Image: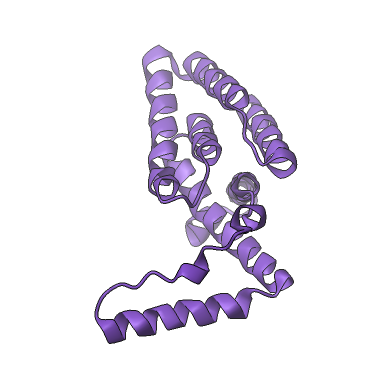
Amino acid sequence: MLSVWLMFGFVTVCMITDIIERKIYNVVVLAGLVTALVLNVIVQGFYSGAVFTLAGFFTGIFLLVIPFVFGGLGAGDVKMLGMIGAFTGYPVVIQVLLVSAIVGGVFALYTMLRQGKMFKRLKTFFLGIFCAAAARKTVHMNNLDEKDAGKNAIPYGVALSVGVIIVYVMGSMNYIMPGFNAMIF
């Protein structure tokens, strides 16, 4: 239980700095990784704890490498999910990513609706599909690259943080209603 509260602490710090400064600090991620490693080694033994921590860390990193390479996320988001995986292990970090993707999608949809850009993006998306089908090759739509895209990007550390909280709240439902987590995931 201590590791869960410590993970929540590190995730909260990452979320706050991502909201305020649009940055997730390496120092926080590294401190979280070291804390997870120490706690897992103490609880599970040296070999099992190290394998558990590193498997979760590298799974978290691996899951977000492709979106990072294509410019969809920052490196801090990738490292933050790796840190979460170090605390949770590889099966739970996958659940965290799936829930975070839904949370991030809902947040992005809300942001586009609030800014009045939803219909413009849908029009551009369907126009791109139509042009690609008509030309029988992929067409790059220049107007998708907005000048203020960085300013309008959502801080994905928030979605990851909310994903962690949701996964742990849903997981805790197993104590109240056995089998609840199996119904959801």
